[in-house]
Length: 324
Image (tube, rainbow, N blue to C red; front, side, top):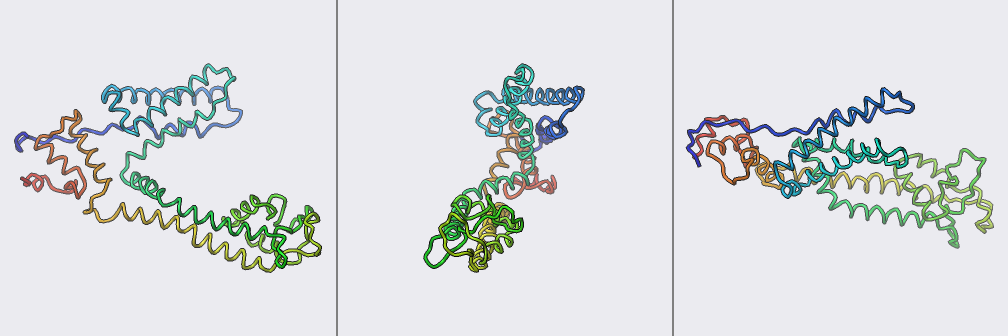
């Protein structure tokens, strides 16, 4: 290391993404029967931004090398996005309308995702969702079991002493009934779709009232009674909404909040995100990856790194240089 008397230098500026913000708006103003001039302007914007992103990708490959470039998942994402954007331009120009690959335009909007790695808070939120995916399958399995049980109960129509909701007739002329051709308990799949609609809160009380006793029976059900339905609908739907909306779905929020609290806990506790920040800041002061820094650069690096690994930007330089 060199002498601590060496004059410190400012950290090298980080390379910003090539204008990801103005590009997605070039997709949003598209509308039917637009003029040729308007379409040409949007096409020009797309070509300009695609060229900028391609240039950024090429410069990174030249700077890091092919192997080091593709070791970073974000670089792989950038490379795939650039390839998709170039393919979109080639298909648009030379496809002659024989090939309709309009989904390639999604690669243009995907460039906005690059902003996720620019902000620390956004990365924390993204990492929270990634960590939550480990526990969310168990919550989904619990909700699937709840839907399965209630769907089986709702479609039971041939029980000797309980006629539930699967035999309720569908009156095409009755506009007041919520039991329709596409919203009923006749099959297991339709019962699941009805329960999913009820779980969202869409007119679940109307479906409940349409399942009460006194409703006409389906002619093809083989039921001799004139009236179908059951007062059991009150307990059935109220208990389902209570368990699903007020308990089960809130487990998703609980899992996400628990992971968010874990990632934003006391800053003195080291976590993976602290190591990621250390690697990022070190790379700014050691772009050639020599694995060593001058003493002055080390002090500046510690000042531009948040605690607990660093001193923080609020630390005065005279305090930082007292560290021996």
